[in-house]
Length: 370
Image: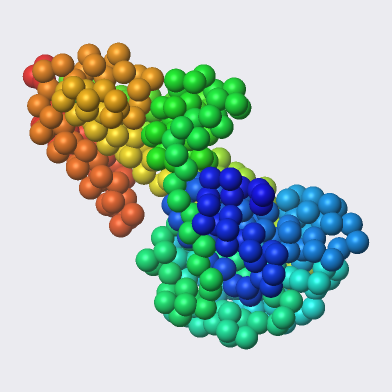
C-alpha cells in the first residue's frame, strides 16, 4: 500500500491504479489540513521516480530525504499568495529540461489555492502540454479557491479528515498519554500535524494561554489582560522565525558575489523574512483564538449535560467547575466573538487592540462582577 493512504481509500484507489498503469501528468490533492496530502505526495513521487531506476530503494530514500535531483518541491513565498517567481524558474522552465537521472521529473506545488490569475496563466501551458516525462502534484486545503483553469487540468484526488481515534492512536504510539492524545486529536479536528503540536510542551502552553482567556472572561477580568500571554507567545514565535530566516539569508548570500544581483537577492530575502515572521506570529494568534472558541464550546457542552461532545476532555474537571450555572446562550456568543476576532486578524487588524476589545466583549457576556 502506498504510504500515507491507509486511511484515505479514495486516494489509495486512484494512485494505486495510476502506478499500475499510466500516471496522469497532473494531480490535484485536495482535503483539509493535516489529512496527509504532503506525506502521500512524497510517497507517490518516490514511486514515480523509482520506477525503472537501477536502484529503486535508493531513489525512494533520496525522495524522502528531499535530495533527489528530479523532484522539485515548491512552497509559496508570498505572505498570502504564490508569486510568479515561485513557478517560472522552478517549474515552468525546469519542466522543459530532461530529467537528471530518472525517466521522469516530478513537481509538487503546495497551497495552489493562493495562485492568482497571473501565476495560473504562467503555469497553464505546462499543465496543458507538459513533456511526457513531467508529472505535477498540486496540493490544496481549500479546493473552492483553486482557479478553475488550473483545477480542470488536473485529476482530483480527495483526502478526508482523519478520524480522531486514528490520530489519537498515532500520538499514543508516539508516547503521548491516552487521554491527552484523544483530546489533542479532537481539538485538532483530524489534523495530525496540529494534534502533534498540541500534544507538545509548546502546544500545552498554548492551550493554557487560551484557557486563561476563557477563565479571565468568566471572572470578569477584562482589565487583567488575560490575552497578554498569547500575544507574548506569538511574539516569541515571530522572533524565532526572524532568527531562522536571518541564518538562512546569511547562508544564501555567503557564496553570492557582490554586485547588483546580490543586492536584489538580499532585498528579496529580507522581504521574505518579514513575511515569514509575520505569518509565524499570526498563526499562533489564530490558533490561540480557535482554542479559546473551542474552550467556550466545551463549556456549552458541559452546561447542557453533553460531556461526550467535549473536545478537551482531558481538562473536564476544570470545565465542569467553570460551566456550573452558566448560560449556554451567552457561552455560544463567546464562541462567535472569538471567531470574529480570529477572522479580523486575517484582515490585518491591530492584534493588541483586537484582543483587548475581545476581552471586554467576553467579560461583558459571561463575566461575574468582581
